[in-house]
Image 1 (cartoon, rainbow, N blue to C red):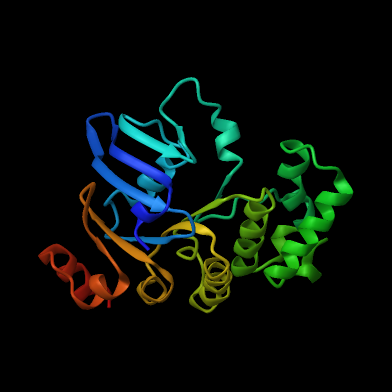
Image 2 (image 1 turned 60 degrees about the vertical axis):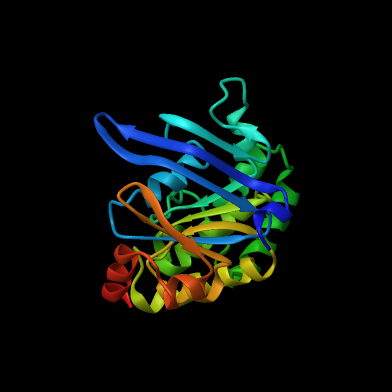
Length: 248
């Protein structure tokens, strides 16, 4: 379904981002519909992660607008913390608190930010751990987990805030190859449930399988976008063809 048929959950217009004299994003325009799964691919240094971080304003935006759930993140009057409560983000590195157990990591934000009582937060956390296949690790410390398990905990922690949008920034790229599958399966399950997601990934097979739309970025631009079939089987731009020839 095209975005025009549904309200855009995320709307990006002329998005620019510079770090000093280095312009990383050079005017991006994209709409993401509710329930849509968009995978962002492209070479290292193309601006993929910076684009993702601008979607919840983890980076200051140099120019243009990013509107999430109707709120323009570039408007100084917008309560960013309130908007971010509806956006879950999972990074390449897990960022779990080492001194807390797995369940305490998951309970922290709902208790602190949403003022959920601890019993309810724990019950919700256990439900999420079950969902990512880690209920038995609730009282373990992060140091005792494998990389794949830590990343699944990080996903459960993001889901504990009941977000309407999930952003994944190369969530599998720091993992050993045999652990990649277990994390991708959790993301697949979220896609099947209709979660709105933007996924920066190097996993082309996964993007082909899960995405409603694939965006190819290079040099700070969106060079081509379309269905997985269009991108992977019928690439139009020479730059995309060259990229796929190297990674497929």
